Length: 386
Image 1 (tube, rainbow, N blue to C red):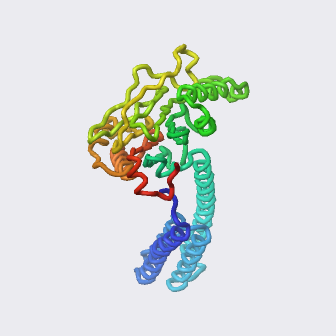
Image 2: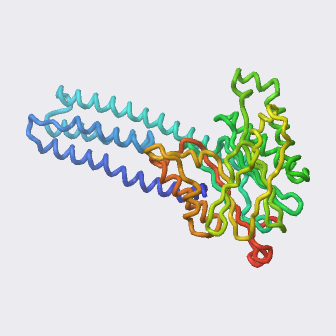
Image 3: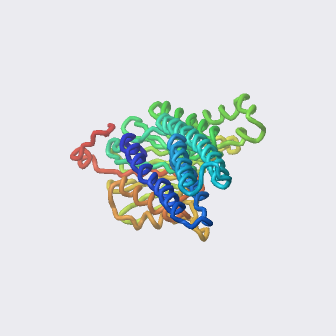
């Protein structure tokens, strides 16, 4: 959903710049004609400085410099027609216009370099997203799946929120999580956990054993002496909330271990049920403070049901009055449909709930619909994984 055709975007940008260029050129023409026709005591030439300044706001240094040169030439024409180039008033105006044109051209050059750096950062972020947060397939076995990631920062494409899916025997395992903190450390921790999940999801027969393996991976990374070099109280206080699920193909249930994460929501016949576990485990990286073993809880998950996994950036989004986003209520109001339609509706509604459509934290959502085996076979999908 983030990919756009580069040729189409460049063509639209070029057409926009051409349309905007008519503004400073039209201003030069109007000021020039008006100054020539104005009474001797009226001088409109100083308004020509606005032309290169306006151009620098949307165009590059070459276009800005050309518009500045046209403005200087127009000022020279005004001087020749009205008095002469050596007239003190027009000489001062010409000098000031040349200096302003040079200044705004340098400004346009710096702005263009900054935009190029931002484009490179976006490219790196998108590449990191494809490596760390691989797109989920639209179908795995009897499950139809959709996912969305909403970055809080406009220039960022990925942060500490994570999700993944993996086949495990006659079922599918999912993980959704949120790394404490921001920046590169959060991305690194997310990549570490996702790598461990993808490598072990199909090897650990028991869900509790899988979560114990993930906990060991996270804890061993936090105990790494090199992590302490990042500064006291930084990486050593990191932890990851996560919900890990096992959904068998042929049994209408799901098994869940929740490690301090917001509970999944189940949409069953128009009713939304929160899948709360009686004794949730601490977040990954903090289980050393508890002696309780990991235990999975089983919930019904029938054909036609839709499961929503999400991170706290969704339910902690506030409107202008400080009210949290009522995810369960809004989910129950969505007409029954495909997971893609559900997430599209929730994404639009979530952004409309926040002031200016800006989230205070990264947010991720994964929608999973169970189909009957027969229906899944009748509706093949090129992205199917069985």
